[in-house]
Length: 71
Image (cartoon, rainbow, N blue to C red):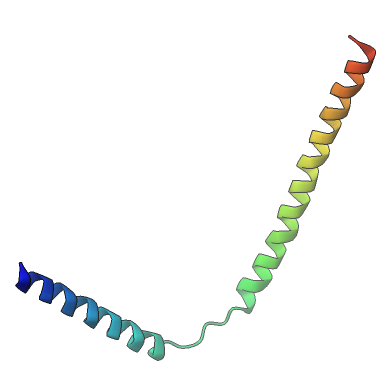
């Protein structure tokens, strides 16, 4: 069991060293396209959220008025 623990620890250490090497060797990622895409999505999500909130307010108002009328 002790031998197995040493092998696992060695494998983990080797994996950590290799991650650093891969991170240094990779080229920088051009993220301008990703950022503009995310910016477009946030406005869409905001518009949909406001539309849903508007529907909820209208339904609540109808229920409130219906309660006043008593029907």
